[in-house]
Structure formats: C-alpha cells, structure tokens
Image (tube, rainbow, N blue to C red; front, side, top):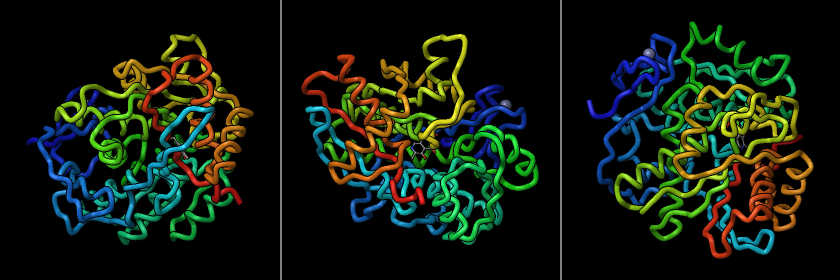
Length: 361
Ligand SMILES: Cc1ncc(COP(=O)(O)O)c(C=O)c1O
Ligand SMILES: [Zn+2]
C-alpha cells in the first residue's frame, strides 16, 4: 500500500478504500504517501493539474468548481515588496475550496450520500458548495454568532444549518454526537482536507518560477492552511525541487492564542471573542502538529490585536483588495514582523489572503 491512513496515536494503518475520518482508537489520522516524480497537467487550470499527487483513484469522481490557481500579485506593504496570493477569489470566497474539492471527491468516490461538518463559516460554505456539486446531502453546524452572509451562503447551496450557542468549541462538541451516525467531513479531523490545501504550495512554486518563498505568513485557527502548506512544501523538498522549507510566520489573534501559548510554553492561553472569527479556535485538534510544523521551518508564532487586524483590512482595501477581518491578521502580522526585524530587505515574502470581504452582510 503506497498511500495509506496512519493513526498518530497507535500507528494503525488503513487503506484509502476505507471511508474513515479517525482511528478506531480515537486518534488523528495522517495520510502518508510516497512522493514520486509527477507531471503537472498543464492544460488543467485548476488545482487538479496536480492530480498525480492527489489521493483520488477514479478521476470520474472528481468534484470541481474550478478551484485553485488563484492569482499571485506583487504589492507594496509597509514599503516592502510582497506577494499576495488571492485565495479569496476561490469559487466560494475562501481557500477552503481546495480542501473541500479533494475531500468531497474522495467522499463521492466512496459512494457516501450524506455528510455533517462544523465550521466558523468558510469551511462550511465550501463543503456545502462541493456537496451540492456532488449531489451529497449536507448538514453544517455553526456558532450562532457566525456572519449572516456566510449562513445565507451555506443555506443557498441547500445545506441544512444547525446554529449552536456558545463559542466555536461548543459547535465542535455538538457536531460530534451527529458524527457517530453520519460521515464527518471535518476540515480539522479529516486528513483528506489537507490534501487539498497542500496544493497552494505547489502553485506558489510554479507561480514564482520554480522557487519557494523565503517567508510565508499564515493565519492559524485549526491549521488547515498552515499544515497543508507544510505538507506541500515538504513534498517539494523531498522531490528536491526546493533547497529548503520557507520560514512560516504563523499568526493568531491576541484574543485566541492556543498555538501561540503552546509554541512559547506559556501556562495559559487567551480565548475571548475576536473580529478574526475564522481563527477563533480555542482547542485546535492538530495543535501539536501545527507547533511542530512551525518549528521545522525555523518559524515563529505571533499574535495580533483586533485594532491592528482592522487596520490591516483597511490597508489592503486601499490597494483595491477587499478581504474579511480574518485575512487582515496576515497584513497585521506582516507589519509586526517587519517592525521586529524578521523580514530581511530583499526577502521573497508571500501573504495568502484567505477570505473575501463580501460575506459580511
Ligand atoms: C478567512 C479564513 N482565514 C483563515 C482561516 C484559518 O484557517 P485554519 O482554521 O484552518 O487555520 C479561516 C478558517 O476558517 C478562515 O475562514
Ligand atoms: Zn489509533
């Protein structure tokens, strides 16, 4: 078996023909595959151009809405030239479409007809859209406070919405009960989701002309973008296509700091409401992996306050780029890293801009 699910706790292995999302011992699964030389399918202008590195056997099962290959622009921020990757131009308005496309394709390949998911909004919208495209029945659990625009979007795709009062973590607990009877298409638990988000790394490599960024600034809640980027760049490293990993500057909200606290061995984390709703995750299930990934890149974890986040949104909007507050964390994190001397003058820096500003209303 060259591609398999492996449990992080008991190391049990499962074939990819088994429709599972966690180990029978309750442990988190990883997807392991031997990275082989691959051909980019150049005529495909979506992330499926990397299909040889994606875990779908039956190509007719692929569910696509044209996700991936988002633009990479050169911008000036704080007097420094950076690249911004416009992930919010994805079909449902966030980078979560990468994970949803690959996960729903596998779910369709397995013949599953009904799924459940919990989300702060964007992952729910992405999974609802791809479930609709695949003809799969879908139910999304959300914190009651989720932006109205995101709830409206999820309902529009035909998914059932269950609002849970309390914070994001209360939603995660509520969905677990349902997940005992319906397949849990979770963006945080399910390793297939990360198979989709890893494609951003391959794209960056292509769009930068066959090199890696030196620094990449990543917002972190559950770590689907960060861990996906880590998997993707690690593949490129194993294939000797890049000489080393880019440095990860991971950004958390100063109001929700589990990864920051763990990384810096602080006794307590902060978990209070923040404008950065997408990364308001008090207990990320893959926290250990996130910290290990940041360390493996010689990276750091920074926190940004809400005022700085909103300032980041404004600065991007002044350049014609309209993102949601969660994405403003990346601009705020960049300014802070610049002030702290973490950005060398000529460094090749990428800021993925994850979510659209249009979903608020
Ligand atoms: C717009 C936006 N950016 C970033 C993130 C962070 O993603 P993750 O929780 O996977 O770290 C999210 C998650 O919902 C999001 O919606
Ligand atoms: Zn196990």
